[in-house]
Length: 240
Ligand SMILES: [Zn+2]
Image (cartoon, rainbow, N blue to C red):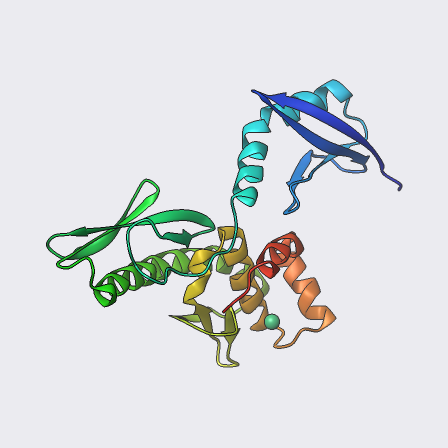
């Protein structure tokens, strides 16, 4: 059936959020924020305008946060000099490096800063080692956590439990071997989590379809229905 779409605006504090409303044969309201910062609302044909308006208003904090996250996301190169003030990117957000002299200890995230304490803060190698080590520890935890989550979905379709390896790769976000080993790029830690999930699910789906056939993509869609939107964000990042 044909869906009809109309343009609307809601107020959220001082800001205005515009959205396109599509009515159709569906039971629930669904809101999608796209990487181009546009917002679509899909609503049941039977819902009244004021019902929809109220529902969207309730979701306004989430919509605003999603827009802000996408807007603030500019892929940046890794620090080059490893000095205080340099920007680094972690899970799609920017942080500043803060380097202090003192007894060496593992790097820590504090607010919007990644704090590194080392015996000699002008020792680039030592600072770099602390930063790299921090990314690696976070990668093991976060990539492990998201792989588990994705696996909960993929395992319903008979996917074997993968063995995960994390390492820095030059040209790929992830890869998988016929034996069921998935390798994830350490640089994924710079990406928003929705991209990380996409890469992991993509590789998990290859354990069933080791190619990019139509069957692979329809299986991916079953496991991760909004993968295209996530891929669009990922495609804006250049792996260097
Ligand atoms: Zn692939």
